[in-house]
Image (cartoon, rainbow, N blue to C red; front, side, top):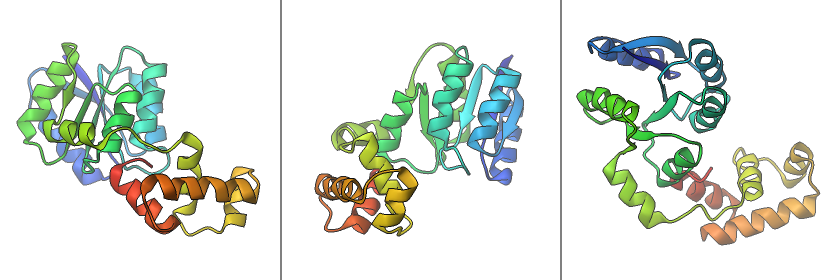
Length: 201
């Protein structure tokens, strides 16, 4: 049996996925989680063959959780299943050690087939998204620029961001300025929007 853990914050979708996979004769759902942090804990407890993670979850997102699961349970393969088919997400997921990246509008039968392929050692990536990621190129933002831009996403002032990230106000201004330039935006609000649309944040 292929032992699968599901991490999805919407309980109805999580239940539907569990039911669908439960119909497969060779797949067993051995754990469920509704947050990224819970996914890491459950994966360490049940040690599944496959961890199927959503990206957008409360607290730790699915991509960050993927990296933590890969380091704590190295024998577990991670698959990302998301509504958000953004090129930057795909690149970040691969860097975190994900073996598959699928969008939720794929046919249900493809999910079980993808699980079997991943267990057989293959990488499974939504073809349209793979093409988009290649044409989009790498994330131009440095880790620190991403951090500052994420902190600015809720409309925080430079003083607030500096206090939260333990940086000087001048340093925050410099990071925001370089982020605006790299995203081709007119201001930081537009820079946040463009970076989010690409999956860079």
